[in-house]
Image (tube, rainbow, N blue to C red):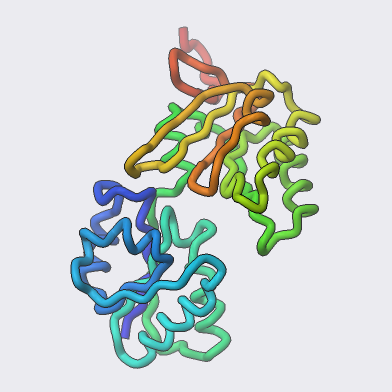
Length: 245
């Protein structure tokens, strides 16, 4: 019995690791959010799948654990990296709760939204940075606000996940306003929508301009720091190397 927890990267097949592809090929059952299953459908063919909608992650992972306990080889997939806002932690919590210590579990990493967005924009995360999700489904907004403020105070570049949704249409604006209390409104920023998927778009702009943008859940935002500059058409955070010129 084997349970793989796989990060599938930003979306396109070329950005899955060889190890992830091997694990998918070995698995009898693929479990995941429908959107992510659809993205890897060309790779898994007619393999059996089990999907649940958003906010049904516990049901999804319990199904995978029970199937693995019954002797099947199962893969739980997450976009990006399964250990970064993905299903890896939840699967381990469920395994501990039900006492299925006999299941062999392997976590297979994937390219994160943070690093893939950074690659599209240039090199904005080459020094210390923080990753913060604006989703308040599992984290109180007060905690998110504090993390944004302290990260900005510390001078981190900030990568923002889940910047907006239908119910959270003004959250990115609120986040930018919090950061602007600690950083200049002229701070270079950028965002990428549909990373590694059809319709990928990116934009570089200032923090002040970012506060006015309308984005969605498929967008990853990067807010630079005092060492971030626009070089040509790329967003770059300098590490401070001497004698560059």
